[in-house]
Amino acid sequence: MQQDKLIEELQSGNEKAFERIYELYSQSTYGIIYSIIKDTAISEEVLQDVFIKIWNNASSYNPDKGRFFTWVLNIARNASIDKIRSKDFKNKKLNLKSDNFVDILESKSNFFGTIDAIGLQKYIDLLGPTCKKLIDLLFFKGFTQKETSEELQMPLGTVKTKNRVCIDKLRAKVL
Amino acid sequence: MDINKYVSSGVLELYVYGALSETESKEVTSILKQYPEVKSEVEEIENALLKLSAAVSPQNAENLIQAIKQKLSHNPKIITMESNRSNIPMYIGWAASLLFLIGLFLMFNKNQELRSDLQALQGEKAQMESQIAEARNDADKSKELLSVIRDRNIIKVPLGGQAVAPDAYAAAYWDKTTNTTYIDVKDLPEPPRGMVYQVWSLQLEPLTPTSIGILDSYEEDENKIFALENMNPSEAFGITLEPAGGSKTPTMEQLYALGVVSS
Image (cartoon, rainbow over the protein chains, first blue to last red):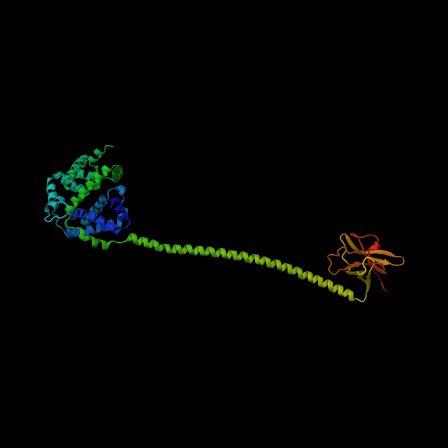
């Protein structure tokens, strides 16, 4: 099914379309959530909430404002950040030892998925520390270009061009 | 626009991240729609990021779909059903107002019908009233005539048919106390057009005719009895046919009836 058509179906309340959307985006969303929460059980809980939100709020997605993937990404990041700020979460005093997605990838013992994990891991090792930082902030944490520039003490334009180079390296490996 | 330069600027990556402002994102979306090569570039970026983030996920998400599906509310469907349901009162409303209008129309029609019926009846009533008045009038007239005929002071003078009309017959009832002579011309032939009967009081020695009246309302009078004023010392009564308006002296050739007062 065509992406646009699939999203229209989802917006009209088609459960089959929802299942397809789940197939396409759940694993990625799970990864985003986990990179912020770093707890499997709580991430699973948040993942469910995120997809219920996707179902309930599908009609508020406007294709003119951006990609559907980006819309899902925002919901996942916001839900995760809300979760780690909640009293409930703080009371658990979770040990947040992992700092970013690279640490998670590196600490993973049993990796699964459609991609060659070992290959990816190797490639991530090849990504310089700047790329790791840029992708972590911009993609996983949802920082703006300006916030990233301030965080990394890097000029705005450099954030954009440097990130482009990082993603190009990633694409060359995973696609 | 230099598409290659645009693509390599890094703006598309930021677009997929959601790191651009709303205005900037809208701009990228419109360029995406115009240039298929920009769209495929965005799709590749998206794909790479999907794989990267999926690799970070702690375990397979597939088994969670059933749990999520059970929690899905079917608000859109419920809304549809509700809107269907809410149509019923609307239809009932329309049907009721339609029925009301039909009822109103029927009542208006009925009202008109009754009104015209009433008018017809009122007309009939007026007609009947005038008929009754007429009948009463006739009855009064008949009573009067009857009393005249019965009155012993009245002199009855039969007027026999003459040469022009041998079968004709008339009668005069002369009430000397009121100086009135009633002329009954029931058995005279109807006067031809433009002609009238004229009644004469006659004195015989010498023969002196005096007109006592023209029966010009002959056609309208049903009884054919006319009351005429007569103050003459009549010895006989005669009826002649004269041109409309009457004549000063009787036309003897047209003498229809003649009778002599007996006493």
